[in-house]
Length: 204
Image 1: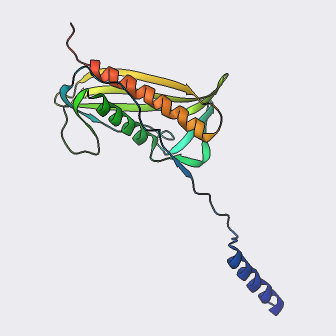
Image 2 (image 1 turned 30 degrees about the horizontal axis):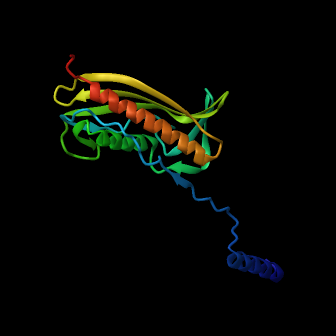
Image 3 (image 1 turned 180 degrees about the vertical axis):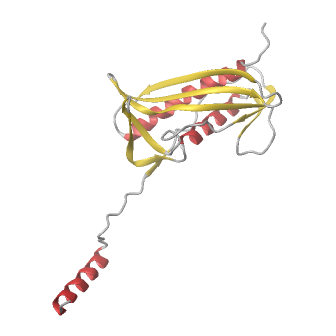
């Protein structure tokens, strides 16, 4: 290599260092999003003397990841760039269910599957939708969950149902999209509270 070439390379490296430039582009740190704080006012008529464990919903990829998903067509998922959920979507949904069930005071104790304590019942579920869809009237956040309440002693299914909620986003901005997800999650968790409270109750 000639002396002139050596000097040119050395100067380029020096200038790149002092100006913060790099041959490789820096990846933008993703924004970390979460549901809004639960604001449910649903309260049970009485507290059932049962403890309830809420398992993290099962979800296959890409629903089981922390990426915020769109589904512009029935055949394709896309990812919102530079943004993600604070944790995997099933964990975000589990935490909301736990908090809403606790606030309702319908059970003597509500725990998540991270707690090693024993429980009388378990809410197991499968997350089958957690994405936005483009519909005629705009963008909608869609959450779909199939749930089962199990008796932990007999392992029998006491109740089973499916929930599907859609909430329209005010705009395409990610902040509005996440707010639509928050509203959909709140509505679904409140429906789950009502359903769990009525499960296996003696008929009048």
